[in-house]
Image (tube, rainbow, N blue to C red):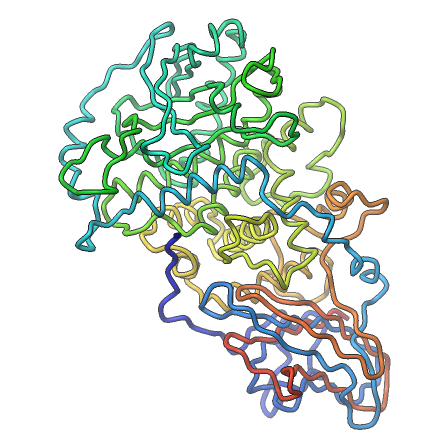
Length: 591
């Protein structure tokens, strides 16, 4: 069972501004008539006991209302009803404006929200680490300090193998439930050695020269040396070096091919396993403090070329090369994160699943930016991320490093109330992964003082985990982070006058990027911004809704000039004012 820590000392922001929040001396927070275009106001249930009030106005007004749930507890679902016909002199409705009406009809039942084989294996490995390889001793103290002297003795100047040398290695059997005791003993031929990598090919797959050209193998180690290693290291700290050779072993093996069912389009590209940090035998710590499978080395296990389908599906060398580029960037973050939490002796747990995966997905983005010559916080538009079907290098880079994150975010945008970035569903659900990547991307953009790498380095080192870690590194309460993120996911780069920069992304123009991505992901004829904003018609319509902690639901209030007062109420199922733990209402005046 995965261990997750609830954040201690959670602070909830009472109000925060955009270009402002439209409040001043004598202003009633629930009265939104004083809000200017671009203002953002945050309300609590105490602020809206009589509803969100819009007195008579002489000009049209357009608002987005987000009902958010910032409960400190993970995956708490709050139910409520939005009452649209409350007014003193007449009825009205919260309605979708023309640019949003088509977006409310996404058919989420057709979206593959379940994890791909790669992500399922990744989560199986991460879950095993958290449940069977704890970082604390039975007495409650950290394990790592107990074995630090032994590890230091082992790490003295290990020799670096040469091309043609044979390595004796153990591959964890990820098809089983016990990766420490179930493993494949094998040998591998060293085929390329660089300053940061040792590329080896399982001898059972055949001679390396049969599967790769030497130029292909050298290109893999060169990309790792020149791009992936320095980029991930700058974002997450230098990796550990428990075998003392200053290099990462990249093992290509047909044993990984076997993890993908025959005929399945998606595939397992590879993984890293933290068991390789642990001693292979009991060092006096008792059960779960050692792992018989351990290679005592930093090592990736990757899919191998298989031109004849000997291990399952036919795999060309070019498809393996392309399909493992993002995998290496992703898994390297896991390696760095887990290595320091084990080796440094200050953390008592591996990182929470949602944040560990968010950082690993962030690594794909970070490496992709370096590959394409883009800066850390360069605002990417659709033109920077080509989706061409031709075998062009730009499309290969986009597919390797960018597309999956944007696709997962599309899934969240289709149902933002159900999938929270901080949810335990990160180990089973793509939409949660997309939201987790997006909120960490938002944090790095807006709470890093312009230094995204310093921000993620602090997250990776911990020693805290999850929401506590995220809020501490951002130096902001979780409600401020959730409020800013939810507003930004609607407002980003729409050109809303007066909007504070903290309600926009620096690294993406999502309003421009997401429509063509969503068209591809959802197989739609037209490209629209995929965030679902709920529509309630005029009259007596109510809408039953729910929010998972860490996310929110979007509504649109669009009113014409009128002499009548309008009031929006958020009620419980009994018709009383809804007041659930963590309830906040974020209001943005759009025009």
